[in-house]
Image (cartoon, rainbow, N blue to C red):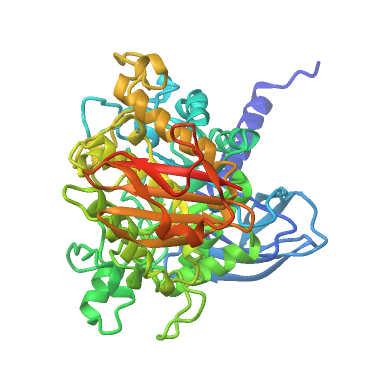
Length: 616
């Protein structure tokens, strides 16, 4: 063993201290590099890296790698940012490479990683009318891991007594109750956003994102989210991710150090959006109304993102592609689609579908008329020269028609008239059809507690054209009205101290069990019902509040009869529908599992429905 003098030892300690200090400083040079990693063999080989670190703009950057071309290094008004434009060449291999930063005598490396691009199984659109979407608010569904209810890296702590607070639901809670989801018969999960929402209050809903690349630790980790997708796929199910382009949360890390003033839409004083979705497509819109919709803030804690900034536009597009590639999700639901810059949104759709032509994207388009919605779901350029490239929209026109039709003294003609406007759409079969979600009063509350009307609504939602979606808890008769925290209520049985567990038959009331089985019957029959998946729709003008329509292919035909009236028909004549019944002599009512041998007339009770799978 070599013995050093005290003087020599002291010198070594000083040198080591300086060395470690230098290493530490270099390690801290970059606060953020996003995307955190990328893939080879992407259809678009370009990549723009956001580099954030103290005075990083003073540094030159280079990549001494023959497989990576550094096309440009772009500076913005904030000296703490650089944007590196890369091209990943075809000869690139998976692995790590160095990005070298140098400013005079000062230099450091950042190690970046390229991974192999995962293969996707889909050959056609990932989510189709074969599917039924089940919308879950993760914080309110089930608490599978009580240890992450409150975490050190997030401000708001669990408080289940507060209807607007964190209740502790998480990704493990969803996984723990997959048997229930499977039994119900839905095929696709849509979770309200699960990315980090580091706000001091009202953070449970997920729409105030503070890190676009990180799952909220109160829900789990990125790996936990990926596990949800992997487990779903193993069980033959799909996952839709809820993404937000319009705004971020006030707790986002960049809010303390914006890349540029125009990163956000900023006003002299707080200015709220007018929430007038139709202003985007209105040919006569005033500039004031248009500015309020597209640049006004959703709330004081939701800063409005300015996608006219090309760096931010690229950042958000890449973030979507990153999550699709990383997690293997099957679709994206894009929040408040008409609010951001519509040209940036069109560019996003083109980039996403260029990389993943099979991908499903549904836009939240909250407007009450089909003509408003058609601006987004069109197969041609609009008269103003704009092309949205959106394949699926949220069919609010049909939603409001359902509420009017099945509400008190409702007329089912509402459905007939709304569907008759489908000619305005490019692809109405791709519309997302729903009878409830996290932003409106519970379905049963809107129908004045009438369980039979809720069942009629479910029959229509699950058998009409489009891709159906239902809201968690409606199948067990949750019935709260807004405010939002109440309609996003806890699923009974999702917490250990709950008095009952509605995830099990024993934990449901008699009425809840009847409705659960009613919906379950339709959903599980629907999985193999080709006439519903791929069939055309022919409907007949309702008479006496009875609506009859057919879903049919060349070889399969289903007749749906919805009696929305208080009158029972013991001998309801089918003669009027004989052209749609040609070649069919009998059928089976899938709701009651009964054979029907007479297609001349049929018995139907008041406020009830029949789903008849016809047979030759």
